[in-house]
Image (tube, rainbow, N blue to C red; front, top):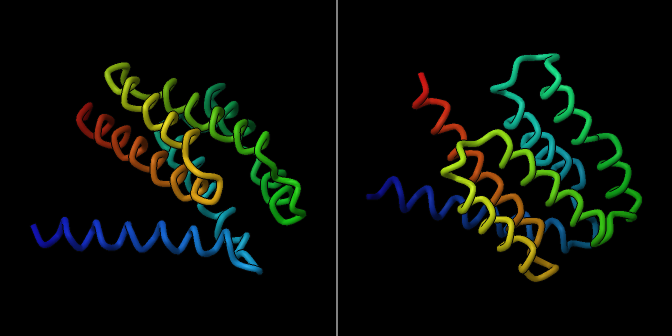
Amino acid sequence: MIEKQITDTFKTAFYKIIDDTISSDKPDYNWIVQLYTEIRDRLVKYLKKNSKTYNQVMESFDIVLFEQMIKNDVFDSESMLKLVNNTFEWILRLQAPIRDEYTNEAKKRVLESPGDKIVSIFIKEVNICLDLLDEDFKNLK
């Protein structure tokens, strides 16, 4: 019980820090790039390195382009929509079909979120979906 409270408090603070980072005068873009990279890395960790699917995921998460776009302030709502669609598309491809409804609802929550909260909600929802993917892969063993 106490462990869940600590975890929930930590997560709430974490997403608040993301919101604060995004809305600050000098956002920590390196941290945002790191979080995006971690999402990609979590997606590929169960794929055979250099397999067709592994390479497709790596190509579709162009970290260098993402970094350049946010650092040069050209990452707009259309770019965010593409990022959201791409990420959830890969989760849907890799997860068990039983999780599809939850994942589609998570994507909907991201797309319906206020603009100033979309990044933190995106990171939160994607990580929940990836936690479920991790759980399913562990259960396969």
